Length: 157
Image (cartoon, rainbow, N blue to C red; front, side, top):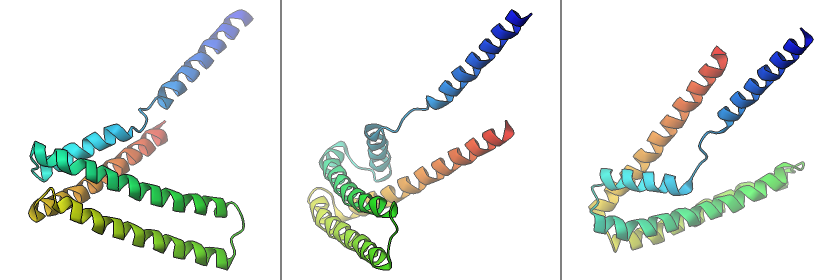
């Protein structure tokens, strides 16, 4: 009888472990996949030709990378300071640093607007900008829905 209980317990623990590992095997975030979806979405919504898309997206992704780097560097500074007790002066410096990052991003966006206008008409660029905003809103909506679905599933268990 003890042997039977021991084997049952081992099987139960193995099933729980396997189930937990399956839940952890969610597909990880792939920047390449994200960019491909973003490119397809914007291309369709802005009605870009293949030639327009091929000329535009290298610039678009180059700008995104530069903006990401600026923001990441600013966040690194915040994470470092957050682990310590921040003084009012530290907070003031950080707030101004974040404002400076936003100004640098705006300058980059202005610079790339000129580059975009060398490969797209102003009307197409406006469509691209609207499509990019729409893509971001749709992405946030899907993420929120997934998170809520996950909460409901966890609460139902």
